[in-house]
Image 1 (cartoon, rainbow, N blue to C red):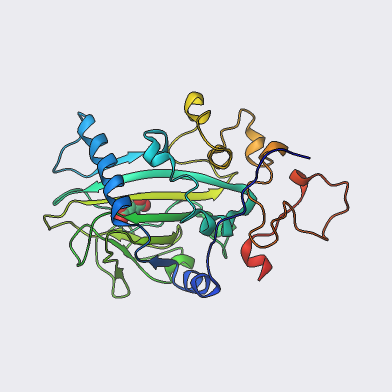
Image 2: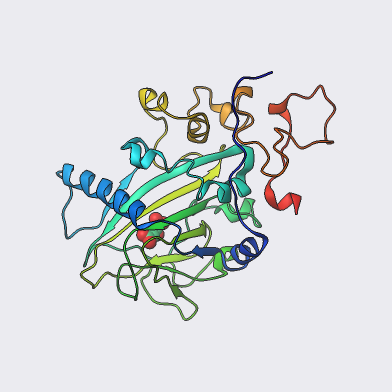
Length: 293
Ligand SMILES: O=C(O)CCC(=O)C(=O)O
């Protein structure tokens, strides 16, 4: 019997939320962060930009692999307010793909229309139904109207591999400008076409992006993490970072990394009734959320 205390998977999509996410390619949940959490995250961002001589207040400032930068950001790796949603997609092979904070002042550089991930042969060619990347956006400043550096999406465009507006800033008749209040979380299918509005306001947009993927997709902002930092992580955080010496472990993680989470409903470390007893836990397929419904 193992003496490791495993955690049950935190809550993820309700059936209604999942239907909306699958239809629109994104889902917005308001008031997920408290005022105190927003203030704490902004304080940490401001502390780090003040330390960076490359920071310029009139320029877009992206910072990557932030989970390793500060304990306030480290907690985002497996935070129960969002990790259950991405576990619903990637289950026992969940991995953190990228962690970022963005600072978007008036006049800063802003992104052209694109979808995330591979361009020459997009993820959707291999995985037409499910995203190989899901992005969690946490909005830390109020963006009540357009022209505030808002994220702009084309709802339902996640299955479309060509779009005439690609690599332009042109607005599209079917676009939706996300006017989020601070404290809102937006979950995005990485295949959705999106761009960023110019910021013509005096509000400096600040937010986090955390993207997740299956363990066998290469991470976007690092190849390895600092071993001293990895040693400070809890078990689930360490697994989700997927820092392996042997490359094939990304595809077939070692036995010690199972279960990542116990089943949310049954509390079991396996799906019962599918294998004979001799099959080791780390060699068994585990069902992801939509396969159970
Ligand atoms: O900053 C944003 O709202 C979106 C950034 C973006 O397009 C990206 O990171 O792929």
